[in-house]
Length: 190
Image (cartoon, rainbow, N blue to C red):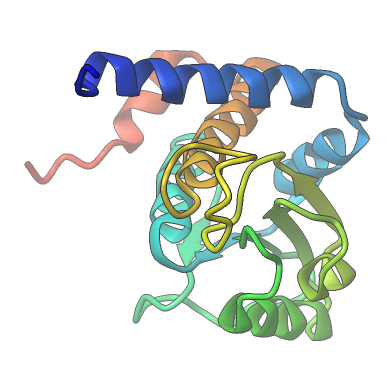
């Protein structure tokens, strides 16, 4: 029996991502269009996720900032209070992560829109969301290996990062900003 290599592991990851993207191509695009409209029209965008999903959303926050959107990461000391006209973009594979669901409830109570990224549209988070983007991936507690051979929600977290880049890329290419227009928004403190 041969030992797995980085190359064979990459093959597993790429195959799973290819399958996930193919599945998304075959689904109703209305939720994705709704999310794009909400982001484009938002006064401010707030992102929130726990663990690796939260890290993936931070990448999306940075890309949205490059577009010129006013973006905040929930939990940072300079993050203002959410209000009507704002959008909260959250990710929770299960749709039951307590802190994420509570943040969605608070945002909804304040009149903000909520975009949820999840593996299900049947959850407390989906009930609060204005739009739910369903990624067909395993949650971190699914260790069956059926939905993904990867460990603890790895496919979901990778898909959150890819979806964030796809949302960014779509908004960017729909607009009239060039790459040169976006570049000055990169951090220059290095």
